[in-house]
Amino acid sequence: MAILQAGASTNLANVDANLNLQTVPGIPEHPAAGGWYSVAGQTSAVIAVSLGASVNLMSMRLAVASTRKAYVYRMRVLISVATVGTSALVPGTLGLQRFTAQTPTGGTARTPNEMFEAEATATDMTDVRDSNAALTGTAPTWGNVVAVTTVPLFIANGAMWMEWIVEPPYPIVLAPGDGLGLRTQVAMPATQTWMYSYNAYWLEGPTVV
Image (cartoon, rainbow, N blue to C red; front, side, top):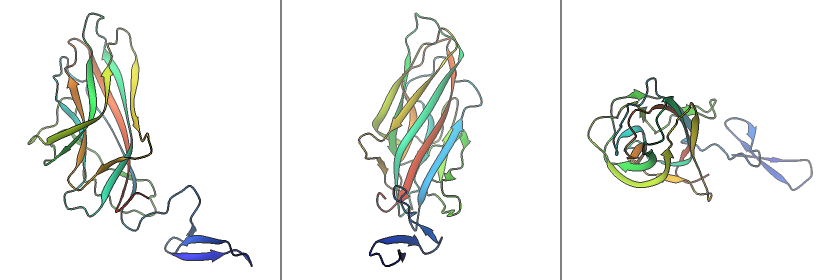
């Protein structure tokens, strides 16, 4: 880390020695290992009718061998109706839930994005995937539900957001081997079908920056 002194003033400004960039107030310094990441995914087919409870549709897991932690501060899911239901049906629910012990398999694997592309530090969130039916493999050990939303009955075309944002300002902390999944909490109704897309944002490092 270099130090920049403006003129004869005693005011000092930090400069990144590797990138020759001044550290701008409000934009945290990029850590030496890790960084800020995002990932996006979506279904390419509809969710089947009568999807049961406890079905894992999407997962993201921090590598067991990681020396870092992941600080997840935002998760956004968009649910769009494909085939409308009827008013007599019971809506299902979808939750953001912690897991550990196993990495789900199947579905479509996604590649995380480094928010500061010039830094290009590889993420340790080495497995992110999603499915329109259910992820497979040995079932992980499920933990606390972080957030949950009702998947409403659509009797006309429409869409809805599920969004989890750090509030109060403390993120979900994932230790090595920990993960998050989008998992049904209550079975989905018959006849109605839907699709989803999602975006997740997190920081990896030894401490919160």
